[in-house]
Length: 270
Image (cartoon, helix red, strand yellow):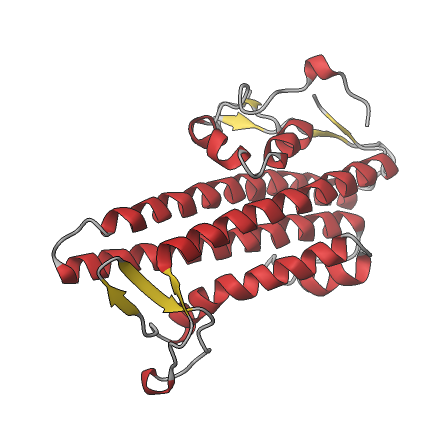
């Protein structure tokens, strides 16, 4: 992919987005490849139409492409920018909720302390689950541009997870097996709350504890609390491990997207 260093924007120095500028340091601490991906493929310049605050670099597509191919790549590219930004937002949101989680422990009134603590815990795992969904979203868009998957009648990318494993060998397949393991850990809380009901917990003076691996769709009377995790420590650990894994996965995403653009003779408008 041809470009000059001087024409490429730098993250977070050149972003026009106030949220990215404000929170870049906490995301880049463990997920530095977010900034690299932004610099290589997204950027952000003032929208000449005035419709949006900023727009991505844009793509130079070869004239040999059909109209349908051009439309597909233009849509997928803009959606990549949207999904990538959403991933950033959700990581920041998860960290914000963990901060709230800690602050609730200073509340003296027991019912308020309990409610606000688990409200923040629940929302933390919602955001972490959204982060994982955006990873699959980004790889689904790559696969769409590769011609490996398509969309359903509602515009949703279909069969993304199996397509990743059937298209890519190691180390990508291994990384996504790790991501599946992280998803199982995170969704054991998120899914139960969303699809079934709140589980049991342990409340002691120093904080709250939840089952290490809550059983899915169990009645309260059937649940066990033999092995528990502190809510704050568990949520911090899950976020940090996810960020580190996202960084590894982004190395491969950058490589695959570069290769695709090279094969298709597509360049980024730096």
